[in-house]
Length: 136
Image (cartoon, rainbow, N blue to C red):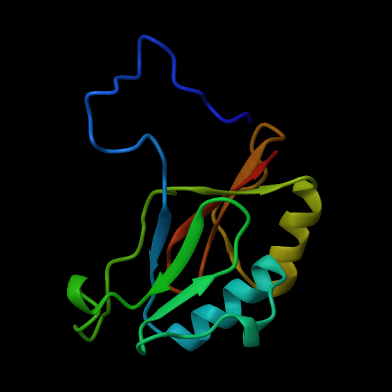
């Protein structure tokens, strides 16, 4: 997929809001467990992914940032934790879709779909968030 560039029909400079994503937040229940899982998923070193303020864990990413958050203001203070993402809201990119699918199987991740259209599949993280993995 290529990055979409604004064109004359879809872009206006009258908005003070930038046409740019900053960071994606993922709701999690157990910040340590989720950090460890996402570090394995993305091949990151856990010691480089510090938990901040007891509820945030920014992950070092190429491009748009990703923060795991127990979201105390948005339901994380309840026993069941914050609601999970039921529809994939973003995608992780891969050059090798089959290797990524096999790797997630080895991790014991819950695969929601098979590889679809030789282009993508969906998996759940330990908190039930649905994540899309897509061929770049």
